[in-house]
Amino acid sequence: MFIASGGGEYTGKSNPLSDRLYINHGDFNFTKTSLPESFENASIIKTLDADNDGDLDIFIGNHTDTKSFGKSPESYLLLNENTTFNLKSLGNLGMITDATISDFNMDGQQDIIVVGEWMQPTFLQNNNGDFKDVTSQFLKENLKGLWQSIIPFDIDNDGDDDYIVGNFGLNSKFKASKKFPMKMYVGDFDKNKKTETILAIEKNGNYYTLHGLDELASQLTYLKKKYTSYKNFAGQTIENIFEKEKLQNTTLLTVTTLASGYLKNNNGHFTFIPFTDISLQLAPITALLKYDFNADGKNEVLLAGNYFGMTPYHGKFDSFSGAIIQKNELVIPAEKVGVNFFRKAVKGLNIIKIGEVKYLLVTINNDKPQVYKLN
Image (tube, rainbow, N blue to C red; front, top):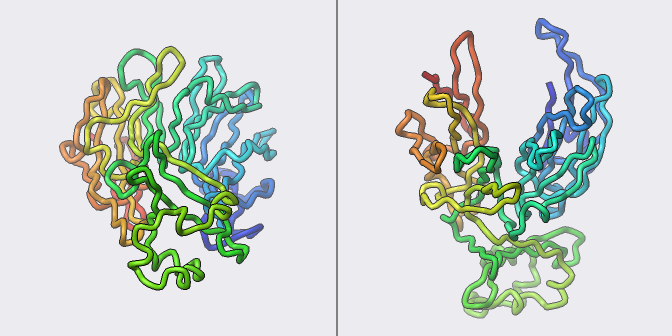
C-alpha cells in the first residue's frame, strides 16, 4: 500500500510530507519499508511499468510549494528494482492535479499525460524509462487552464483514445481567452521574503486585479498609504496599482481556457473540443470514472466535481450534480440514473467489490463518503 502525503501545514523537509510504502505479507500484516526522501505536496499517484522490466513503478505528481503558491514543484518516478525503489526526477512539470497512463504514440510503451493548474496538458513520452516532454508534437494549441482531471475515452467512437479533461468551468468570475489570458503574478511584492500572488483579468483591453483593496492591503500594507479611500482605488489597472518594475520582477502564469471538454485524437494529433452542454461548465470537474454503467458492453464516463475552497467574493461552486458521457458525446444527467452530487465537493470516484456485488464509492471533501449499489 502506497500513501502519498501533502498539505499546507508543513514546509521544508518535514517528516509528515514523506511518502510511505507498506508491504502486505497477508492476513492484514503490513510492514513499512524505506523509500528515498522526498518532501513535496503530492496530488496524484499512478502505477505503470515505466522501464519495461515487468514490475510496477510509481509516478508521483506534485501540486504546490507550501511557501510559494505558483512555484512548480518537482514530480517523480519511483523505479522498482526488486522491491527497492529509486527516485527519478521528472523535473518541474507544473502544479499537477491529475495524470493518466496511456500509450498516446502507440509505440508499445506506457506514456504519461499530466494536467494541472496554470499549465498546459503535458505529454511525456516514454523511451525505455526516460520521459521526454513532447507536448508540442501532439498538441499545437495554447491550452493553459486550471485543469483538474483527465481520463482516456473514445468519445467520438472512431476507434482511438481521446481524453476527457476537466477544467474549472465557465460559471465563475474568472475570465480567460487566448487573446486575453487570465494572469497570475507570483513574487515578493513587499520585500518581506514571502511570496504573494496577484490575479488579474481583462476588461476593455486593460487588466484589473480580482482582489479588492481590503484583500490586497491585508497582505501588502503599503497599499493602505497609496490608496486612502475606495474611491481612489476604484478603476485602477494592475499597472496603476503596482509599479512596472515590480510586475516585471515577478513570475507570470497564464490561463487561456477555463472550459471543460476533450482532446480529440486526429491520427495522433490532438485538438481541444469544449463541451457544448452548459451543465458540464457549471463547476470544476474534479473526478472522472470509466465504467460500463448500463451493462451494454461499452464503457461510459461518470463526471463529478464542485469546489468550495474560494473566498466569499467568488462563492461556492456547488451546482454540478454529475453527468454520464456516452460515446458520440451523449450526456445523461447523473440524477437520471440515481446519482446526485449537488452541493457535494467530489474528490474521487471508484468501483469497489464486496462479495459479488459492485458499488460506486464517492469520496467527498469534508463530508462522509457516498456508496451506490450498481445494478
